[in-house]
Amino acid sequence: MREITPIYQTLIPGGGMWSQVVGRGKTLRFTDLEGGANVSLLLYNADQLVERYNMPDTLKGQHVFFLTAPLCLHSDMGRILASVTHDTRGWHDTVCGCTDARLTVEKYGSQGTYQACRNDFFRNGRENFLIELAKWGLGPKDLVPNLNLFSKVVADGEGNLTFDAREVKAGDVIELRLEMKTLVVLNTCPHPLDPTPSYAPKPVGLEVFPGLPAGPEDPCRLSRPENARAFINTENYHLLRD
Image (cartoon, rainbow, N blue to C red):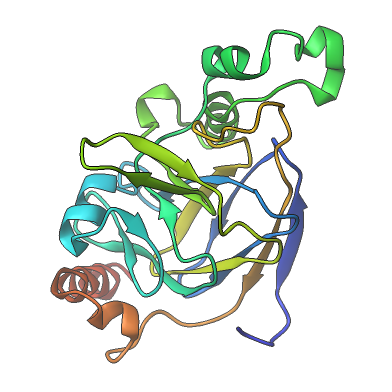
């Protein structure tokens, strides 16, 4: 893990949301401060917002069901938006999406309204995403399948999905190096399959570190042939654009 001083840091409370444009080569470090956190994450090319994280291409190009180091996050234009450079959790869900208002009421009850709880009302991932996306001129049509950092979901032989919290612990981190100038949009609402009976989303620490994009011998670049090809596409994009 890096020892240099972050250029930015913040704490995102449970059920909170955040979005910012982060430059190419910088690294985002997420820390599960208490254990049991979930970070629902979307990524967009900050200079061309029609390009965004693509879950199917990310999975099929790397022959995976979940993400960990040294894998990559592909865009729908065949480029790399981010690389997983460090990960102590080892498994991050790619397929379950986020909570919405109906699911939140079904899981946690109807007592968590704004009228009853004010700022402590029960938030959901979809509405938090839409609030942050609206700040950048985006809306419902721009919602795509999101990542869920720190959450492990496994499938059985029939394809049934189960939330696995056996290895959850406080202090776990995942670091994402951005290979493009990226609009990062996230929220810390509970995972849709989290079996915890009460609404108790956990806080997450977020830090940003300076750095450079992947070099020719970078482990993320070399981890899969499709990643190497996508890095070439990304580099050509910047050669022609910058």
